[in-house]
Image 1 (cartoon, rainbow, N blue to C red):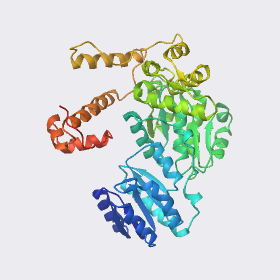
Image 2: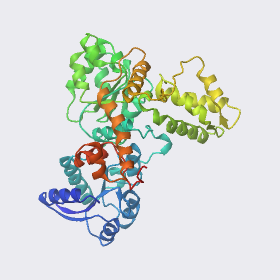
Image 3: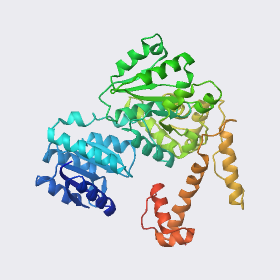
Length: 456
């Protein structure tokens, strides 16, 4: 690998690691913590490749991409970002980034992408070959800011271009098929077909081969794979075993416990292990209640853009929407909001109107309150019991221990930071943990750290 690489990142450690790795690979490297310096180098004609962070002390790296394109058409830019959201990936595509990687990134993977980018620059490929077509923000398949969704975004970003099958699990209405589509649309296979396999596609001796031919190296999605007959499962196994060098990527969705079905003899073991390269578990709406107001506003705005009258939600109505269990998840919420937009006679949707639309569906009390003087352990136990009750006799998704710890850790650390005025050394001492441990938790939990006012 040869060429000159311009690295822009405000993290000195990342600049050092990239400089050393690229230099060992045979490249010349110019590294800076300033977008101003980066743009000066670009305008001077330096660099065959740019690797840039998004959030920098003197600006936003994504906002620099159009200027780089004007100054140096064809200069590839790889964006690296700790803001691991689907929206970041979309913005990177819209601003014509060559590639996008989330932090923390895999260094060998980044080096491979850098080598491809340098080769692309040498062959002066057109930008339409190296970037995806922009998408409207209104088509955003995933909306959410909770820790559960942030973790999902990071996992989706990591598996986008991994050459592994993907199994997407979650309850009905959580958006499993949309996630599969997003993984395809933001991957290196985005210009190739995305084929959703149906039962007729798997019938007959030639069905599976015809299905693979339609995909042409793109993506095949087996939607709700647990519903397939044993005969269809066997044909999928034979099809996967017959793939050659131009094999399509395989994804599957399931709202049932595939491992449980396999252990019960209802799902083929060989197919289970062929589909489960990476498992993406989509949280239910009950597990990310704090996203409900954001999703509600998103659906209200979408309805208005589609020509419906402008509507807002009264505070007490939003309390009820947040408190409801939403067994149909995001899909049910979207349909409910659309119905409210149509049926509400006034601009402000009231609590009574929400109650009317929800009808006889069970109403869940908000997870707040409790008796005065109640012990913390009793309060936590009450909320956990309510969480189990919401699943209607079915066990919650696996990974409950880590999810609950995360939910407790995040407010604890935020409040402790407030109490210590944002001083991490004092905060670590208050919590009784190592300062490096605190820093790692702040990063993992995506806690925004600012100078805070001490609590009295």
